[in-house]
Each structure stands twice: as structure tokens, then as C-alpha cells.
Image (tube, rainbow, N blue to C red; front, top):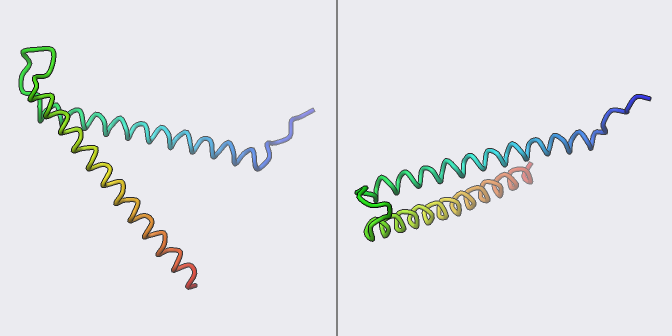
Length: 99
């Protein structure tokens, strides 16, 4: 007895799972790239000497300020992106209702 082909729903579920897995991988890569950029930026900006294994007090304060500044900027950019996206969706809905 031969197996019947997968149903349309099963095929769509499998495709959706592939897309979600690819999206998660892209998000992970983006997060790692962002984190690596933050580390490089703050390290280059703040670390001035290599005489000790640990950071000096001024270096540590600089790194904390640098990271805080970065996260505040990322949060504001994310909020602004959300606002613009919502505005565009609202405009699209108005256009579609007008047709």
C-alpha cells in the first residue's frame, strides 16, 4: 500500500515551520552582529591600556555608559520603527477601504 501524499495543511505547516526557522536564524545572526558591533565600539572607545587583566575604574565607567547609550538608542530606534510601521499600515488600510 502506498502512502497518500501529505495534505495541503500538512504541507503548509511544514513550509511555515521552515520559514519560521529561517527567520529565527536571521534574528540570531542579527543579534550577534549587533552585540559584536557594540563590544567592538565600546572596547575601542573605552579601553586604553593593557597593563592589567581587568578594566580600570574609568574604563569600566566608560564601557557601562557606552553600552547604556547604545541600548537607549536601539530602544528609541525600535519605538520609532514601530510607530512608522503602524502609520504605514493605517494608511494602507485607509487606501484599501477607499477602493
